[in-house]
Image 1 (tube, rainbow, N blue to C red):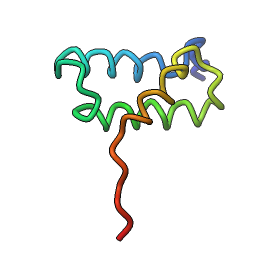
Image 2: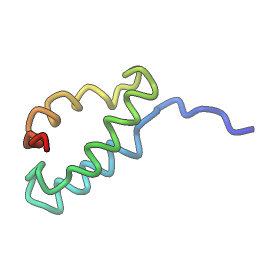
Image 3: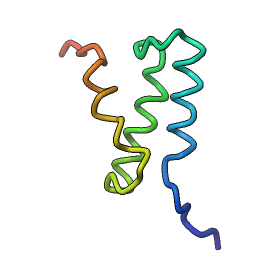
Length: 67
């Protein structure tokens, strides 16, 4: 049985860094990977060191209009 990672959400955090670097640090071009990190952080109750940056990135997301 696989043991839980000592660093949950590390992959997602690294994916964000790679995406931001590739896209001139424009967060709007990396929404899917930002959302993946948010989801991971929610699953681990934000107990990962990699979850500290989520709130700042989410504030930069454009608001979706209700339909």
